[in-house]
Image (cartoon, rainbow, N blue to C red; front, side):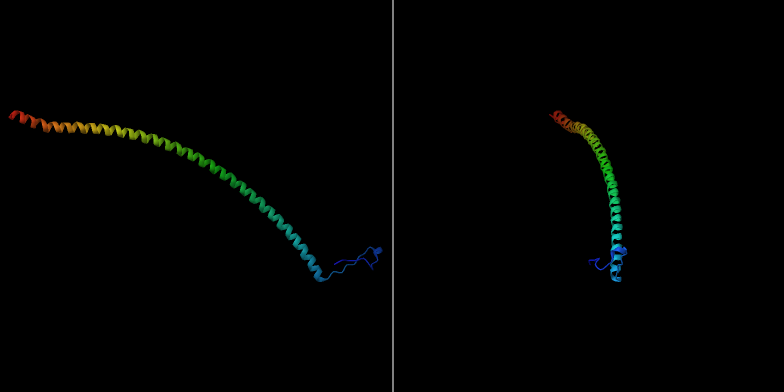
Length: 128
């Protein structure tokens, strides 16, 4: 809608504007909408800033957890290496013990063999 000054006396400096009730409602709604948009923009901006802060806090926590995990993994690597060394030593000791047992078994078998064979040989030598 275009307003014209034709037919009005501008020397009086008073302007009379007539606004219908519908137009007033439109103007008020438009004004309220603008205020609501500004409020929403501010809220969105606040939420965005809060989200950025939360994300930064989470980034720090993730970084800290990553560091802790790396430290724990390094500790586990050391423990595994130590256990591997202990197991190798235990296996070596068990092999030595097994050799000693085999040697002892061999001696016992020879002793049994001689204990059985010598009397038989002596018996045959004594007879013959």
